Amino acid sequence: RKRGKRILFDVDDLVFNTDYVHLILTTLDRNLEDTRVWDEWLAYSGRIGATLRLCDGAVTTNEHLALKISEFANVPVSIIPNFLNREQLDISDRIYAAKCSLKSGGDGLIHLGYFSGSPSHNKDFAIVIPALEAVLEEDRRLGVILVGHTEPGPVLKRFGSRVKRFRFHDFVNLQRLIGSVEFNLMPLQFNVFTNCKSELKYSEAAIVGTQSIASPVNTYAMAIRHGDNGYLSQAHQWEKMIKLAVSGMPAYKEMAARDYDDARVKYAWFNQKARIIFSLGL
Image (cartoon, rainbow, N blue to C red; front, top):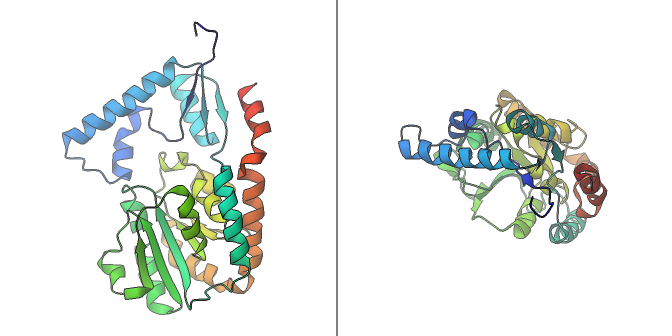
């Protein structure tokens, strides 16, 4: 400020308001009996919130989170979505081109993928486990690929080689794995915290021509046109929606093309300059 600079705070999660710490810990499946967990998260969230309130404005990724920031800090908020950088886009274009030349399920399986960026998604993944067990039992064409910190557990392990797990990957190589599956599963618990999440997992899948099946939290519901460029599933509908998506395999490439086009228009790095300049008033 002494140099006449405007100070903006950038955040893409609801981690700045201590009023929501209990919800965050429950959603992330943390041990609520451990006082150290409460101390860590109350301090972490409190310091972020205190810093946010000292700034002249904020930048975030979606309207729902922008509203929470505005209510908490009473500062102007600009919205710039999480977008795909040049390196991601270059590799994704090659993956999508290769995918278009191949027959879906060419290795004999139609793949359902779950991509976990942190160890904190146990409760999210638990939403789809009963549905995965049911469809794997019923349809031997289906396989599951888990990437990141998620473990298959005894329910899915019994399907042997049809369920594969890969270690955590960097964001570029992650695109290769997302491109290797036909369907990207995005289950989320439905609450204030998850409704502030960005649609990043949708765009990462769409740009490699992989269709998404997602919980209808705010950003996913805005990004996905059900039945046109993906599928939305309430918690009790996952088995039904997985079967619906698989039944659409004859038109898979047409929907994948809509996904790809949508991602390039909305989330490619080269389409963000005007939005950034406008949002920040530059």
